[in-house]
Length: 343
Ligand SMILES: Nc1ncnc2c1ncn2[C@@H]1O[C@H](COP(=O)(O)OP(=O)(O)OP(=O)(O)O)[C@@H](O)[C@H]1O
Ligand code: SF4
Ligand SMILES: [Mg+2]
Image 1 (tube, rainbow, N blue to C red):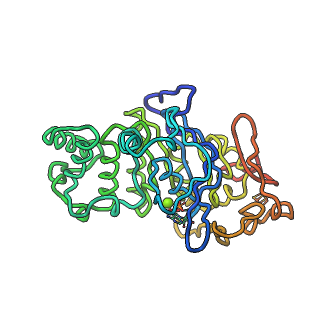
Image 2: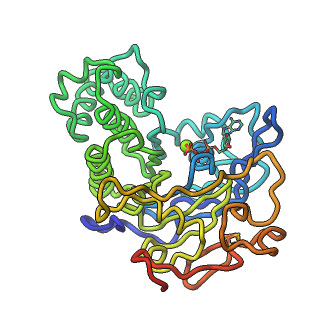
Image 3: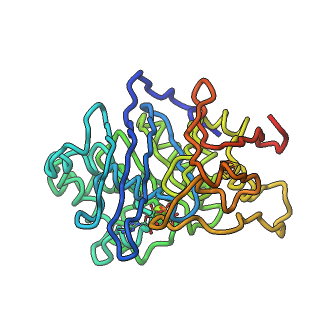
């Protein structure tokens, strides 16, 4: 848990990233999709924020909105601010954003095959990024691409420079994606499901790689996953998303010491545990998240929550705070520890 082990992260009082009441909606055939619906979160320099939630909870839309990478025609940002190093990214022009995107804030996208160009050798793809953002000459860019591949643990990197994405295994492709994202030494790296679809051993290697690179570079990291177990390995702070909102957030220590939201507890129960025999069935969460284009009344988790009462179905619980900084949105909070007992 809590990844700050090697070099101490550089921490100043002002967070590197602060989202304030961010709302991102889409115009879609089925109506207005409230993908991100009033999210506030802050991330200090050198720290790791884990964002966790089931499929469709708004994790990727949140990540892409930081980079302002959403379809212009259908996206409506109805409110909020995205402050990066004190600057509101929502107010920047496209050319100003291009100086930040990929250079100061980089992203490892959810699907490496759609993010890598299938017809360009990977060495050339990395060199192109270096030329575009840093104006590097071709020779220097190729040398740096080789260094980057070696630093992310790609074996025989010189030979790999000439290969195409489809020639690499899933784990190797993910390493290449990380090399691409690290090319310009970003201050903030957003890794969106970097280990999904990888087997457990490769998953652990990729998480270890991210952790080492973060420590070596003093980088700030946002790690997104549907798996609370993955996020728990690196995150200093964890934000749990459900149906476009943050429903619980706290330091990893506080969250696992005292889970308040039944949804967080359900995610926790769905983590594979080493202590359990391999044939043990994971506890799935019954039901499905609500349609974000439909009517959202009361607590969005109520139809699936075994503690739901009348108030839950009628009134949306506000994000309450337990000092110093544990927030949760629940009318009947629990007190559950990661060891299974009551806090
Ligand atoms: N361009 C779009 N137009 C309309 N709806 C969209 C668009 N992009 C995303 N959505 C919707 O926004 C919601 C949040 O999507 P998002 O991709 O952020 O989920 P996620 O938490 O990343 O899920 P996953 O774990 O499957 O990656 C979903 O209901 C999705 O269908
Ligand atoms: S507010 Fe009610 S329905 Fe929602 S999580 Fe809490 S107990 Fe369950
Ligand atoms: Mg996603």
